[in-house]
Image (cartoon, rainbow, N blue to C red; front, side, top):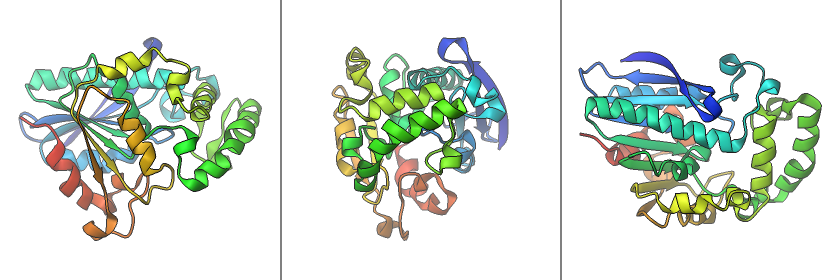
Length: 284
């Protein structure tokens, strides 16, 4: 396996940082792009990417512009919004599509949470398969019970005050999410407080989402600490133009104690990669 660091144009012409994990074989059996969750660094997905590269796939991980200071500079200088990050994902899909076309192999989009939501922006990118992992609507009304209870305090009081004071959202200091650009946190917060989520500000996007024809598998788990099973089902209905396979990840069936919102991507749960993900990746 080899690693290749890249930059490609994203939203508003800003450069997006990415990293390819490439197999040793002369040509990959398929290309996989891994779209990160909100406030999740690119490096979080390195174990899965390396595992897939060892099995013949060329895998792209990437970082939304402004999300990681070591890649883009101080967060307080970022002007990115949550909508921009969806367009960064669209650019990443186009970048991955170019490699897939050059190799003559199909492309699979693996989206974690927010990254899975970005499928709605890929209607114009030929993606052969999509796997959403714990990807539901961000509306707080369908969050897990504990999140549903305290999220209004976060979105209406804590986040606005902390963001105004720091110039960015200091999630690490607050121990709630990670550090995020101010524009991203403010827009995402408005969406999460509305039943229609991102469509509350951009109703025109429903037409674009309806054009998505990529077959989708939505992996979810009942022990998700952030979103509910109904959140998964609700988000799946935003893609009326395609078939969606809903697959519950039951920890005990795979010899695990729990999965959670992000546990799927941790190497200790690699059994899920072999049993649930690998058979659903598009390959030549």
